Length: 99
Image (cartoon, rainbow, N blue to C red):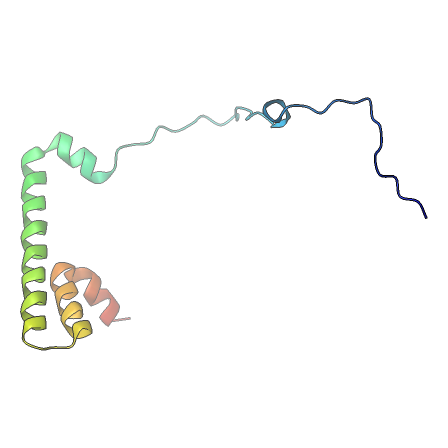
């Protein structure tokens, strides 16, 4: 059996830019993306936003200090990290503990 190595065609191929389908506008109206909670908080109530950020920073700083102290005391790294995470993210740790 002979294989046809090349077929001569008269058609030209379309460039890649033309071959790609264009996005059709949908009939549904597009909703504008609202700024997230923190962006709105910063613009609407900057004093409250600063207070919240300061509290979060203090909590995380304390968690890092506790982590360092536990590691210097010779505790297991995973136990020390678990303790620090419980300080930094208190709601997250209680949700995992009570499934």
